[in-house]
Length: 192
Image (cartoon, rainbow, N blue to C red; front, side):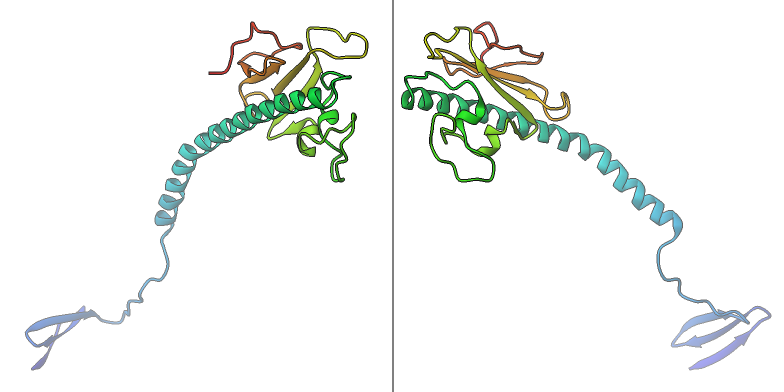
């Protein structure tokens, strides 16, 4: 049962007991896509999530760099003990290249390249930290170096790391939030 009901503005039809009306002279098109307001709301939500997430990612990266630095200091301690055992006539190594090998080349063990650490660490920079190895608090006697001091400093403080690390022949890793000067001493707080 279909009946036309006409008035001045709308054209209506009855179909199965329901009235369906259309405006005369105008056809409505379905809108495709999103409105500007909807897009702005989505962008605002993304910016809020990014503002929350980015500082957390930076803290996680700094924490990872610091953990890598502690591991590297421990590796250098182990390498120094191995170097001292292998070359007891020289004592401890006085620079990082003596513990590692040349970057990108095969490592051949000798007094000037012990091959105890990887070439990346022996180049003195790794994971946002700069490493330095110097003679410790005891000076060399008769060509034998009886002590060493390792320092790990963030390349960009408060971006690549917050803490500074050091160690010497007792092999205890120590840390400080302030800069540490060589040689590392027992007065620097041990890492917990």
